[in-house]
Image 1 (cartoon, rainbow, N blue to C red):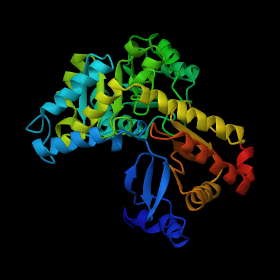
Image 2 (cartoon, rainbow, N blue to C red; image 1 turned 90 degrees about the vertical axis):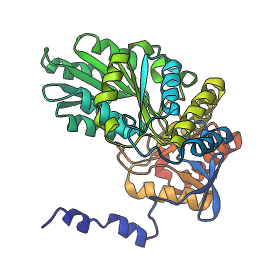
Image 3 (cartoon, helix red, strand yellow; image 1 turned 90 degrees about the horizontal axis):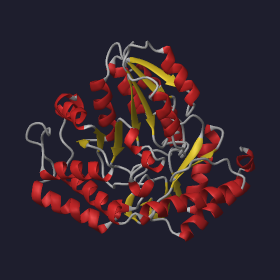
Length: 394
């Protein structure tokens, strides 16, 4: 017996490979607009988080190239030591200004951002209260912190209130929700959540807006879209979606950011975001500020797709660039994925849980054309004929 036994017993991936139905880790090449090359054919990509299409924007790519020429490929150290550059500081300052928050701190990736913030601010005796569909990084961070973990039914503010009332009144509490939920594409009811949180002065609210920043309110995110941006205590964003790069950031009052800057292990004990990644995120941020029509475009595109699929009878959801199509079971999900790929040259996104139920997770971009929308709806029309039960899911 050993810790490897579970690995030796795992055969699901190998069985799928043998059946030629393995859908994970596809090798994608030559991205162009909303398309990629896969298996020597150009395919329409409807699974990317490149919501504004900036990952292939020439200005963003040139900024990354210029950063490599100036700083090299890596800073080769943590920011607290000798891994900081003017780019990191510029990105923090401009991000805080854009999102109207006092200060920002850039981490190497989104997972580390949530981990660093929650583990540093929370500990034994505290309570972390999460939406049941909160991102895995938030769940892991809450567990690692040593705080008491409580979860409430998705977007149910009455359930949130009950969970908070069950906590000791004199305990410190952190409520953490996603601004936009990555698998369902729906928004957190932030005004109602804030109203509940403000009933207890020992409650702070953190919003993970990885999928909302750069999309809603001309890029300023979900809280701004819902009119409560100035009432969020901790705002987390990532650069791997709309901002065409990688990395993450936490925004909060200056004293909190300064504390995290000097105490968060995920900041102090890992290499800083690379110069190319930092420059790309900064360039994308500047484009979003100058060209807010990109944000409006992706929302209009995803809305047209959602309406088209709904009219065909599919069970679809979301209020964002993410349009999940419920499939009901794993076999149908995998079959639908391959049907879209082999017969329509369309690559869909994540196809199996961690979602609450099986679905094709589709998502759209400002790079999608009107012709792309028609192509997707037409392909799903064919899918509905091939799998008629999909159109009865709603």
